[in-house]
Each structure stands twice: as structure tokens, then as C-alpha cells.
Picture 1 (cartoon, rainbow, N blue to C red):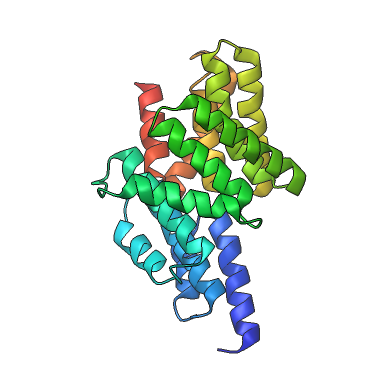
Picture 2 (cartoon, rainbow, N blue to C red):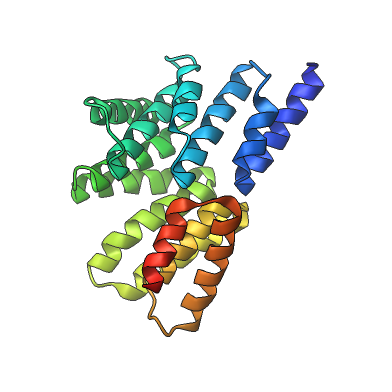
Length: 240
């Protein structure tokens, strides 16, 4: 494979990844052993597992194929461990330590600082129920997202912070944050993340709100097309 072919395949795979076409993205990278392609393939397969709920073995194998000392390998291994813990998917005894250590490494690297802080916050928030610790990491991640112009990172942080704001009774501000998170994901063209944001916002609106109906319809179409299992489950729970 020539350097031009490698570049074209990686670029195409990145675009397919954004669209949630994980199968074709992974297929484009299967014969490419460059570090960039291996890292992207591991990320694609992890995200496919995250949204579809299957393929954990393929994701784990792709992550294991990376340089174990690389920041990306540590971050993806941490995210995989966190996902097992969050969804109670036969977590390993050391999954919490793996996740925390990986996020610490990512947070210390300038290239992944904001994402490391965000994921570290989510770990504390959703696994340890440490909202104070989580908010400190979210604040650092939000600062990084705005300094770097990383709209997707801002979208992710706002979505998690919104639950705390809503829980504190600040409904209008919480909804504003959820809507901004949705709009930022839409601007980035990340279809699976858009569907997830539509589901989450819909769940905070009244059953007779026309906006809720529109969000449910849009998220349902994407969930069916892309096989987004937990988004589909969430929509079914809203309809029950």
C-alpha cells in the first residue's frame, strides 16, 4: 500500500467514523499497520461497542494491539474499563484502577488533557458518585475545550454538567446546556452522538411538548439505521 493510499484510507475511515459507519471504517484500516491506522481502528471498534453493545472482544483486541505505553492506548483501555464498569458488563477486578490511571496519563499530556479530564470526571461521577470531584475535572475540561476550540469536547462536558444543574433545580439553564450540547454535536456531524443528545434532551421535556416528539423521531431514525442499541432502548423507555 502506497503512502497516498494509506492517507486516503485513513481520511475516509475518519469520515465514516464520524458518521457512525463503524464497519466500513474498520474495514478500510484492516491492512494498514501504521500507528495512526491502528489507533483509529481501535477507536472505531471501541465506539462501535459503546453504541451497539456488542463487539467487545474486537475492541479489546484492537486496543491491545497498540503500543501499551502510548497515551492513546492508555486512554482507550481506560474507556473500555469504564464502559464495563458503567454498564456492568462483567467488569474486571482492576477496571477502576485501569480507568483512573489511564485518565490521569491522558490528562497530563497536552494533546489529550481536556479529554482526560472529562473522562476522569465521568468516572468519578458515574462510578464513584463523587459529584464534587467530578465537577472539578469537568471545569478543567470545559476550560480546555474553549481554549482549544474543541466543540465536541465542550458538547460532552456540557451534557454531563447539565445533569447536576438540573438536579439543583436550575431547569432553564440545564436545558440550555443540553441544547447547546446537541447543536455542537450536529455542527460536528457526529450522527451517533447527535442521536444520543436528542434522546437525552427529549427525556427532560414534557410528553406533550412538540420538540420532544421531533427529537424522538429523529433519534429513532438514526438508532435504527446505525444500530444504536442503548439509544433505541432509551427511546422505548420514553414511550412506555
